[in-house]
Length: 234
Image (cartoon, rainbow, N blue to C red):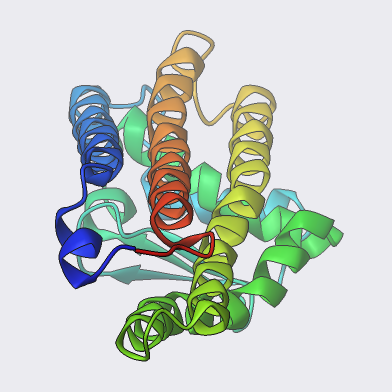
């Protein structure tokens, strides 16, 4: 039987370390890739904000606002309030990287506009996944304190699995948004023919962070199952 000591210091902790290393590597890669192509200014001298506004108009989307927010690579699209937010490093920059990121967020707006099913599914899962993430470890710990209460422990593991479900649903949403962005950039003339592959590199690097996050969550879930997934006895 695993006690609290086994929970925090069990050899399976190497699974968490692997996930952490993957996440850090993906984050470092996306940052270095963005910095590389952020130094290359687009030949059309279009800012990220201008690119986003053009794409939305071109796609017939008139109910989405564009705003600048603080931070670096904090760009996002909120389908709830129809607001596309571009970070400082994207909004006013004319770099290939900035335009690629802005186009990616517009890809999410296009998904929302066209009723893309995985985006709807992800939005529906968010509340449940958030609750599951917050409740999982308290449930497991409570189960341990109550003498290996397997029902509570299993509920905690199931709650944690909801976070993985959310990340798995996120993968096709992000890849599809990038595909839409690259198609728009290639057809819309915002980037030249030789600049589109550069934007593709930026969006590919960004996609790897989602893959790494999902992998890290899976490894953590696997660890929880190995530690507490079955009825253990001394």
